[in-house]
Image 1 (cartoon, helix red, strand yellow):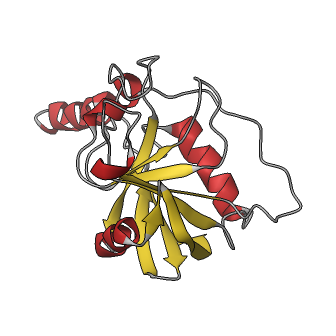
Image 2 (image 1 turned 180 degrees about the vertical axis):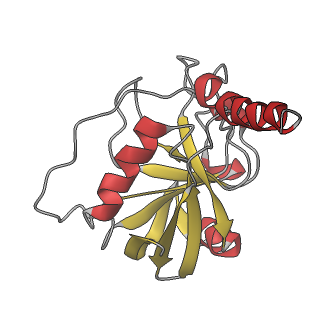
Length: 195
C-alpha cells in the first residue's frame, strides 16, 4: 500500500502542474453567393478580437453583408508594400449601430500570424476595429506587428483562419473588380456558429 502512495501523489501533482487546456476554437460558417467556407475563431489566443467578431456573428449583423474589396498586385498603385486579401463586413442597411471599437490585439501578443487563410480585423488607427474583417490570400507578413503595410507598424489583429472552403475565398479574390472594389460586391448570405 505504501508503494502505491507515491503514484497517487505523483498523479495529483501532475494534474495540478499541467497547463490549463486551451479553449476549443469556435467554428463559424460563412455562406456567400459564391459558396460557403468555414473559419476557426481562436478565442483562446485572441479573446478580445474573437469575442467582438462573434457578437456580430451571433447578432446576425453579417447576414446580408458583402465582400466589397479585393486586393491584388495590380490594384495598389499607391502602396509600396503589396498584399493580397478580400475584405467584407456587416449589412450596411441594418438598423442597429456597430459595436464600439475594440483594443488592438497585436500579433506579437497572440502569435496568430497573417498566413494564408488567416482572418483578421480591418482598421485605420490602433483600437479602431469594429466589424470589417479580411482574409489573407497567401502569406502576408507585412500585416503582422512590425510589418509596414500600415505605417504605424502595429499590424492587424488576426483571430482565426479558414479551415474549409479556401477555394471559395480564392474565387472571391479572383472575381471582377474595379480599382479594389468587387464589381458587383459578393453577397454574404449568412454567418453562423457551426454545431
